Structures are given as C-alpha cells and as structure tokens.
Image 1 (cartoon, helix red, strand yellow):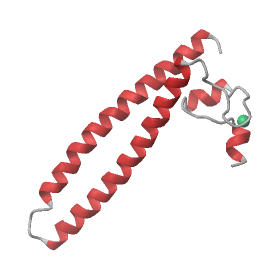
Image 2 (tube, rainbow, N blue to C red; image 1 turned 90 degrees about the horizontal axis):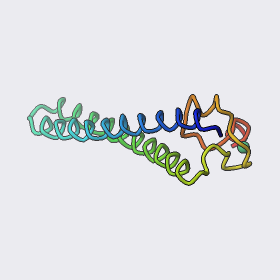
Image 3 (cartoon, protein in one colour; image 1 turned 30 degrees about the horizontal axis):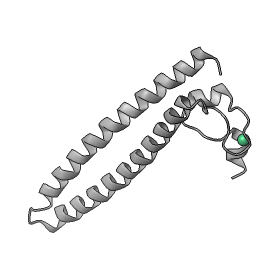
Image 4 (cartoon, protein in one colour; image 1 turned 60 degrees about the vertical axis):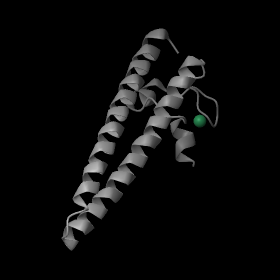
Amino acid sequence: MDEAPRQALHDQLVESREALRQLLIGGAESAERVEIDNSCQSQLSRVEAQQGREMARALRARWERELGRVEGALRRMENDEYGDCFVCGEPIPFRRLQSDASVTRCVECAESE
Ligand SMILES: [Zn+2]
C-alpha cells in the first residue's frame, strides 16, 4: 500500500481508538451513576437501573471489542502486515478499508463465513 492512503487509514484508526477510549471512560462513569440510583427505594427505578446497567455493560463490551480490532489494525500497520485478508491473503481493497479501517477480511471471505 502507498504511503499516503496508509497514513490516512492510520489517522482514522488513531481517531477511532481515541474516541473509543473516551467512550469507555465515560461509560464507566455513567455505570457508577446508575449504581447510586439503584439505592433509592422505588421498585420501578431499581428495575430501570438494572436495565440501564445491562445496556451499559453490553455497549461497553461492544466498544471493547471494537477497540481491540482497532488496536490490532494499528499493530499490523506497525509490523507492515496491514491490509491483507486474513483468510485468502489478498490485499483488501482500499475503499473497503476506508469505510472500516479495522476489517481483517476481503468482501468475498467475509461473505463466505
Ligand atoms: Zn479474502
């Protein structure tokens, strides 16, 4: 891959990493707030707090997975292994990487899964 598109994807990945880190930090704070709300007496608000915690947990798990993917892509860039499909080894088209810089499979391999 040429230097310029590679750099653009790198910047995109660094940006996503920072955004996800911020979300994860913010998510931890709002989960704590829910914890405090849970101490009030009303049954309904306890249920709501429980649901809120579960949603926050699911969201957090998704962000963590995404962060893992983004960090993996950045690592592959450093090792000069970036941009090839994990399955068939062919270069992943730039347009596909542009829409999601952390993808690890070309369209064909992703669809045949
Ligand atoms: Zn492939």
